[in-house]
Amino acid sequence: SSETLGKEMALLLDTSLNAINIGAFTDGETSVKVEDRVRGKDVFLVCSTISTDAVMELLLTVSALQRSSAKRVCVVIPYYGYSRQ
Image (tube, rainbow, N blue to C red; front, side, top):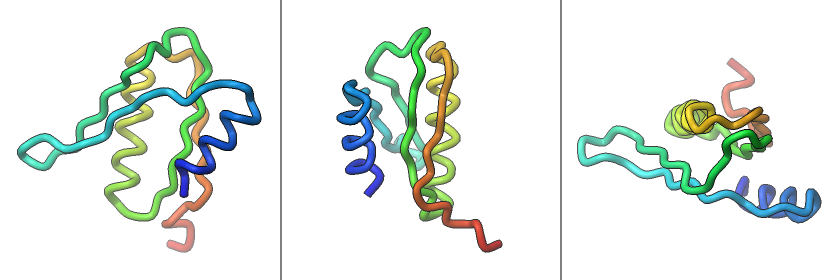
């Protein structure tokens, strides 16, 4: 899974994983909350796009990281689900 790959990448880069909570509001909209400080840091986001919900979560997470003033956001997509379209 992407979480396992993220943990292995963090281990190789000698860093820790950041806490990001992804959930849903009562009306069904996706909620993304960045729990750690990322201001001025390079952030690597590991996320597969296995469904339209996963694509939306990816876009909202990138937006939340940018609004949290991350220096750069690098997205690693080990499985790009809509590449055949």
